[in-house]
Length: 65
Image (cartoon, rainbow, N blue to C red; front, side, top):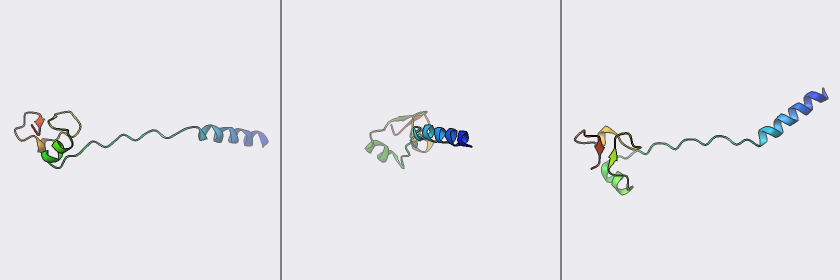
């Protein structure tokens, strides 16, 4: 019985030293190109955070050019 208490106390002590993993930041969302420019993000290339087809008027893979 005492052995179990010691093991449990040891596990609790180990657990106290662990910190949770950081949560990934959400991908930026720009309502329009003016907002992207204001944030200093324009132009936004396809594959970059914040790119979406709604901001790419001519469909060339570059938004807010």
